[in-house]
Structure formats: C-alpha cells, structure tokens
Image 1: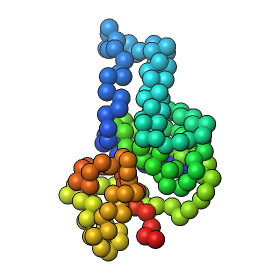
Image 2: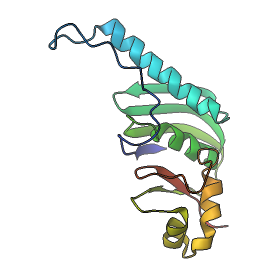
Image 3: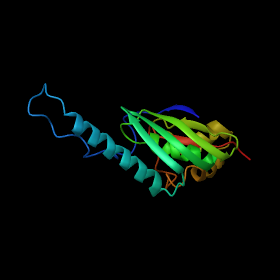
Image 4: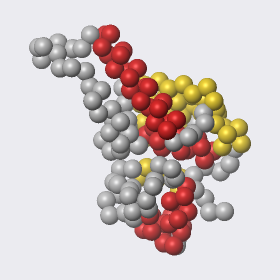
Length: 164
C-alpha cells in the first residue's frame, strides 16, 4: 500500500473526449454538475480499463482527486495488485495512484521502473538483472498491458519482478 507516482503526460489517452464543453466566457468555469459528471465519467472509464484486462478486484472502488486515483478492494496476489496500479497509472492525465488494495496471498514486491528514451526491454533487463537475455521475464511480468516487447514508450512504468 502506498502512493505511486507516474508521469502525468504519458500513457494511454483514456480520457480523450471527456473534457467539458468550453464555457461561453473565458472566466466562467464549468458548473458543479458538469464537473461531477466528468469526474464520474473518468472513474467509469478507469473501472472499465481495469476490467478489460481481466483483473479480478473484489469490491473495486475507485476515487479520483484531480490527477490521483485512489484504488480500494481486494486482489488475490501481489502481482495482480501491481498490475492494477500500473494499468491505472499508465493513463495520460494520471500522476499518482494511491494504492489501498488488500492482497490475499502476499509475495515479494516487484520494482517499478520508468522507461527512459532509448530503453529496450533487453537494456532494462541488463541493468536490472545483469543479463539482457532476461527481457522475457519483464515482458511476461507486464502482460497483458504489453502485447509486444518492442512497444514500450518513455514515461511508461513497468514491473520488474525479482528473479526466482
């Protein structure tokens, strides 16, 4: 449990099209009802994103405070907990995930790594494990969010699990 930071302007553009209609005058702000509706729409999109990856989170509850997602619920494993955090945090516009998930079966935590410009999974594996050929471990640890080992981007957060 804790607060995990992410690069706010990197990740999937899940909220595209959810911005309120521009007010008639520049000084006017969207009314409270519009703000609440927009926030609820974003929360629903985040919920659907978690569910689209097949993660089972018992009693999933998401809250959104500006650019921070608060996630509550219960997951079966540490791996699933970390993947839920990464899915939520790797969304454009989200800067932090406040993890309040309970884990049924505890295990050692993975390290989170922010992809840098020029990184490859092999380069990351060499730096983290001392062996570039261990890149499949990182790829497998980040499925189903990663579908191709060559499709990572700067600012993306990845799970780097301990070697067994």
